[in-house]
Image 1: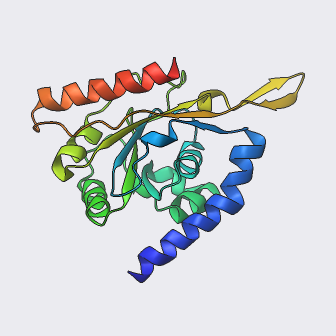
Image 2: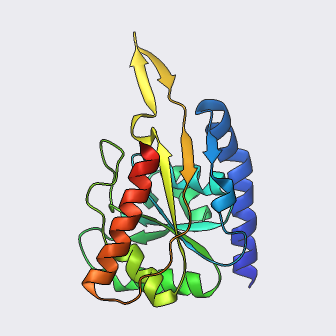
Length: 206
């Protein structure tokens, strides 16, 4: 219980002291669809992925304590590793079925802690959802938690150079309506919900 309290406290401090200036002042962040964010209970936030800054920016904007699956290499990057760990992120090994990661995600949901998943599993150059994985749908079925589709716009092109001068792109985050868990764990059931998530996120990006 104490560890959860401290994590929540650190999350709020990091969010307000470090992420807020980056989100609001540098990238002029804007949130659309706040009314769709559940205010009680755990849920699974599912998003597109274009930048290493997506987890802290999304976590701050949504305003809920969200633990992200993040590739293990990110935890070795100075400052970024500290930020994502402080915000409750947990490592996942790419390219393998990581049972430990799945178990951690289920435990967090069981303890009423929301989690965040990038549905493609890795960053996409165009910032869209191109090859969605079914992991989010499976976790939703196993834990009977709602899926919250979220689109982060322009994260794949945060900084542009013009005459060697950096220009920061405006970040817009759109929150879609929650999606119910799949009816079953069959490939067809998971595929339908995964496609629904892909369509919802890409439509918001458009």
